[in-house]
Length: 247
Image 1 (cartoon, rainbow, N blue to C red):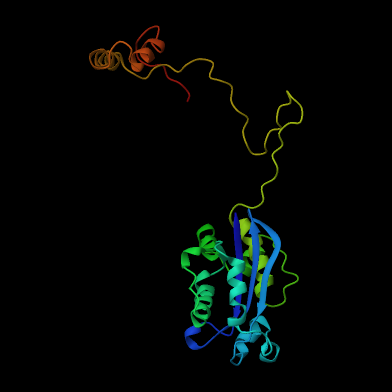
Image 2: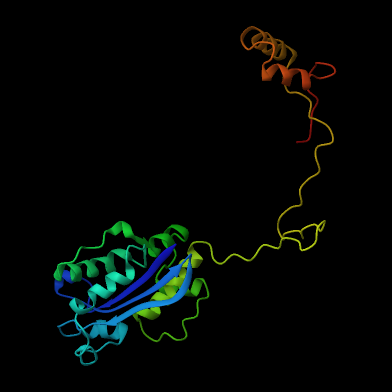
């Protein structure tokens, strides 16, 4: 199973206000395992960089002015993501920007159902808790030491680790007893299986209920009915009030 972890950096919060993508980072997962395959591009937004956005990702107008336009990399980007599900934190934000850029170059927009939104996953799993990427990295002890500012590719790498934790984390290998006849070690916190009940519990049916049941089975289900066999197998040696048990 192939999935793509994706992140973008932008000049602002809404493409409707003229803001553009300045960085795209993608990381390939195969069967939930990161591979060495990535897609990364800085983009010339063809507009000034607001100070607030620059403070978040550190990308300056002078750094981006010689970078390619989205129109020059969109074919390579679409080829990389292909038809794989997209793992995105706060998917509506990134899809809004990506689709604005795709529409601008005449390409087909990405449908929202392609996205697996890790922000939605985190809110369901940890309701009421902070669920930003930074907060989830702290929760799952994901190392962010190499990240001084937001960056699309480094954030994709971090998000991949967070995503794996949100879907259950890495499972330890099962210890399947190397030698025949060796009993598996007990699992901490799990009670050992109980021995079979030494004797059956006394029936809870009253004599009147049992006779009514026998009459119904004989009249409607025939001599080979499963319920008749059950009555014969579980018939008490003496029918009376059920004895008290400790169950």
